[in-house]
Length: 224
Image 1 (spheres, rainbow, N blue to C red):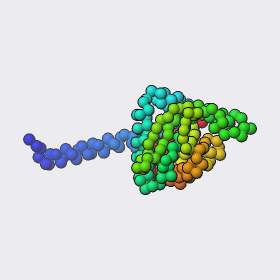
Image 2: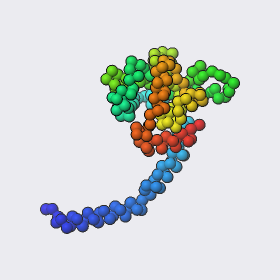
Image 3: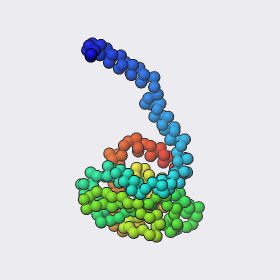
Image 4: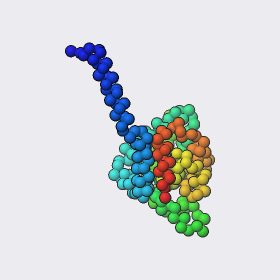
């Protein structure tokens, strides 16, 4: 048997008052946010040190189909609308290889007299992925062999995790990273420049959640 409306209404009002009162006692949202930033500040140095090894373990033990499917889904969620508008048509028939390296790639810092680019070193790769645009304007991701000598691609983007995160979240532009020897772009010059300029000119704020950009900025503040 249902309760009279006045009883239900009174119960609902009591519940609402209880929730409001409880929320006033909880450390939300300011204290929770401060705790979250503090947690990132504490764990970030360890994450930067151990991150490459963890990603390598992930790459070795998780099937390529699962890894590429997840990355492909994320890229399509972010760029699907732009791809449908034809903004990525310059990638038609092209293969872009993304190589994420360990910090060892920056060994040139210990030898400032060297004028060679990190590509001339033998960087320790953390992970390698290739991105292509299909004729239907959908992005596809592949996980090729991790040996650089065996790769076939049109454009190569190589950077360590902090440089790549800076580029994706626009904390630094591609030209700055390139001249700091933190980013290598090689292969098809025209496509590489087009892609680099495209990444510089688009605004990531409508594409990525604000909290993700804030977390990335906080992490980059602790990058070695």
